[in-house]
Length: 392
Image (cartoon, rainbow, N blue to C red; front, top):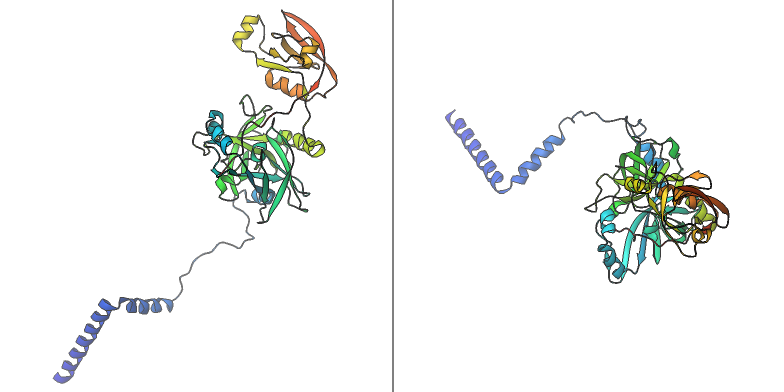
């Protein structure tokens, strides 16, 4: 009995010594052994969500994104603009709305923007400043294809442009109805911010009809807090049905990133400009050759006006339509073609809608007396692009 006990003790001692040696010199052997034990144990029971055909959760905008995203593209442009890039880096207006200026490499500038397919025939809407001066344009579709594009026409006054790719049966976006949009409605901004890839951000309509911002000649912006960052320009602002409400245009920023104040060109303006560019290659607008100025309360008091509607003619272009018709600096323009003028924005819009060559009547206030002036409408000269292309 004593011999058996002694043998047992020696066996245990040898086993413990072996275990100690293995644990010290080869611990992975023990880990492997332990994991094999775990693999043989009973699986843990977990709960999984339903399949991919499950209905979206309340508040999801996946369907709107699914409908709109295939129609939003990335636009890559190349131009020679090294000295111009430095010029815009020193422009406070550019830095205010876009942050730092474009990156340059040697004598080439590589820029990134977004666009929206508006026709299955290959017509794409974007911003004029995205493609301005581009020597080469390439469009990256949502399905990964990359194709060259050509310019159909642009309109710097609204900062819109139409380009075209030689492809058929492309997914195109559905144009929405701006008259149904209200402040507080949820909207999605789709584009390619900073070159990270197609991105969807969500916000609300913060305001409608924003103007007097000094961004474009003709302004009627949708303001939104949906994040619109550099690279988003030319992308889509859509409603919760995935229908186009506007083309993303600019952001207000001090850092180059979104501060929750973005502006989009409304679909009403977009459709008018797009149709004119596709039909004629450009937008033709009326023009009378005056420099308008809003009536401030101080000016109204100085002129003895009972109301501050209308616009003051601060200057008249020599030899222009207004000069030939007898309009004088200091006249207060009250109406154009019997339509009342409330401020400079309404005056520009009313005149732009006129057909060059037609005769219309202006009503002005001169020395406290109203006078009617017949004028032959001219054709508005093409404006130069006010901003460069947006970069990553």
